[in-house]
Image (tube, rainbow, N blue to C red; front, side):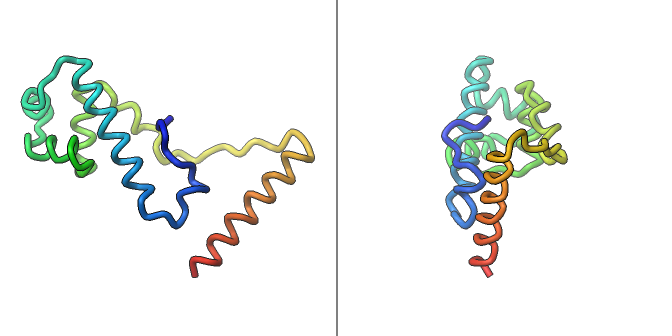
Length: 117
């Protein structure tokens, strides 16, 4: 879904991971704004987000959740938020190898959590 964004496994304990995700979202939002031929001023006015907040988001990837949602509504991307924290359905492993791999993944996560204590 997010280009060049590390996986959860890679980001546990990495303080830069959220910055990578935020920068990717800001770049895609700027691309969508340009795709729709909207200036920063026009998007700010239509969304009710201050021009300063919009510029700060595009430059530094900093924005409030409320402002991000307002921008996404004007850009036609609000549906991206609908599944954000939905409970994921776990599929049963289809083979013994897959079951073992899932077990190793869980053990790795436990080890990371233990080392963070």
